[in-house]
Amino acid sequence: ATDQDTKPTLPEGTHAYGKLILFGEHFVVYKVPALVGAVSAYTDCNVEFLDKDNMNGAAGTGGLEIVDNRPAVPNYKVKKAEEGKQAIGLVLDHFGLNPKERPMKLTFGGDLCAVSGIGASAAQVVALARGLSLALPKEMTEEEINAAGYEGEKGYHGTPSGIDNTAATFGGVLRFQRTDGDPIFIKKKITEPIRIVYASTGITASTTTVVGDVKAKKEADEEWFDGLLQKYVTLVGKGEKAIDEGDLATLGKLMDENHALCQELTVSCQELDDLVLAARAAGAIGAKMSGTGRGGLMLALTPTPEIQDQVAAALEKIAPQVWKTTFA
Image (tube, rainbow, N blue to C red; front, side, top):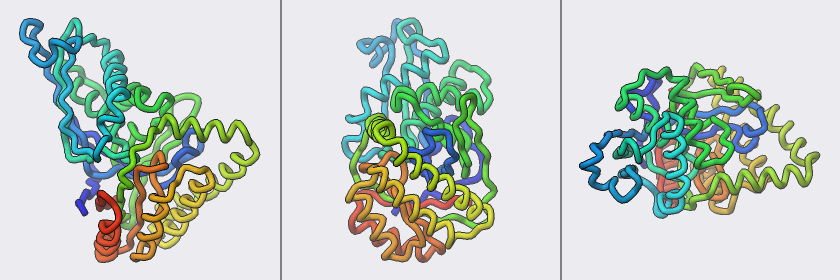
């Protein structure tokens, strides 16, 4: 398992973090709070403006050359290629840049493995916003970087919640809530280190498709959805209290409950459920799917470094990729 320990400092240069949703996938879209933790692994981006007479790789692509050196699970970049181009285009539009008039080369790298559920798309567009800010140069606040990232996320997610780009920009553990205006987010103080193991199913899911499915189910049976939403609102309130108090045992139980709600929403799948059960059997005090679902990632809460290693070792036997991170 790869160690990815979260540093509580803000990123420098063009770093944009990956994220894990602790509570609230899918429900967050409907303006209730979610809790999200940024992992320490990041995407970065180098932006190089090119001379029109010397465009090299940008010549046949409308003045835009994209070099994607990010580590990724198999097929992720292929499946997400079209959405990625749209997302990059939206960020460039936000900055008022047209590659046909001002050719450029974008190089993406870093150590964040692109996998469904980790917020790789948000990390990519936030890193791009940071890279453009440096290359232009244009002084930007963190809020402005976040806003540019949100615009890019529309290419991947249609109507993004904003949670991924906010975690990618600010790092740490955040309480996030959409409103009719700007989203509200509060950085949480962590009293007890939250040690996490997270693992990939190896399946890349389309967030737009899964969110659309959930919306259709909600519209077909509002009463059923409202029942789940109310259960979730109670649960996330208790989850936030457990984080504030450093009560990991309660936090773990609530993660288990959140996974059960995701199962009722039909966004889990056999592969996720198998990893969740294996993590619990190996000593995790809570485990759940994280992110879009129907593939992607799950995470497990482990109370000590020893149990963190133990759970990681158990998951490595059945998952294509396993990582460790700590929110501190």
